[in-house]
Amino acid sequence: MLIETSAPRIALIECIAKSLKNTLNDRQISLMEYLNELAFVIEVEDIGTDCIVLKNDKYIVLLPSTYNEDDLIEIIARIRLQHVRYYQCYSTDVRNILDTEVAIFTEKYKNMPQSKKYMVGSAY
Image (cartoon, rainbow, N blue to C red; front, top):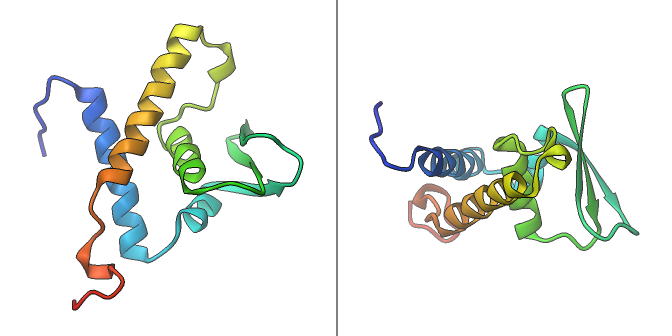
C-alpha cells in the first residue's frame, strides 16, 4: 500500500494510533492490558508522575496510583513511537518535537471512532 502525503511522519503516527485502536477492538482488551503486554507496569503510591525506563530492551513503567486513560495513551504512544531511549539526552528542541508527536498520537487515537463490531450495546 502506498500512501502519498506531504506529512509522512504525521501519517505514520496516525497509522500507529489506528493500529492501537484496531488491536484493542479486535482483541477486546483495555489500554492497561495492552500496556502490560508492552512493559512491566508497577503502580507506585508516592510518585508524582509516570516514568518509563528502558533497561536491556525491556520497558518498565512506574505509574502513580491516580493514573487515567490519557496517561496510558501517552505512555503507549511514547513506547510505540520509540520516544523513550535517549529522550533526556536530546536537546530541548528535539524533546519538544517528540512531545508534539505524542500529543498528535493521543489526539488521533481519541478522535478515532470505535469499531462497531465491539461497541457496547451494538446490534452487530
